[in-house]
Image (cartoon, rainbow over all chains, first blue to last red; front, side, top):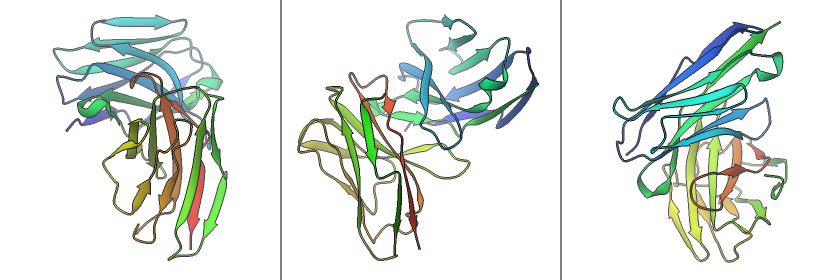
Length: 111
Length: 111
């Protein structure tokens, strides 16, 4: 089945700097890659996603890139703000239309 | 995601008791999912349903049961056979088996 690995597990950046979180997946048939943001005790919120027929997608300060050949995708957050501090999860849609999630990255933005 | 509700927010049970977690959505979504989240970990799929009266096991279905008698409702029963039931349980729904939108979660504690 699909396996998703996410790095780093924790990331600290200074306010205003950029943050990059990377994920790799194992199933070459996976065709959809969402990113979720989860604040402490809250539900995961979908922040951006990309389908396998697109290489990059941008929404204001966040962007996602996909390299199908290497089977990895990344989340880029520019001009980080304290409210970006949260846990971020990547996921890949594989066999059976199921999402398989990475283990998460704790992002801390220091002001 | 405001159209997905889970109740109760907190649930306490004694070991050996079955407990049912509620998940309701008014988004007219066909697909619904149950995930379990343990501290510092990602989301693991318990059960999912892509259509009324049909559901499939996820990666960690042992000790759990579900039903999908109505499109709007996908209750999860945690049985006494589940060895470590204390966790944060998240329900999600999807209009197309791609984007998933999460409910607020139920925190279950079994002592």
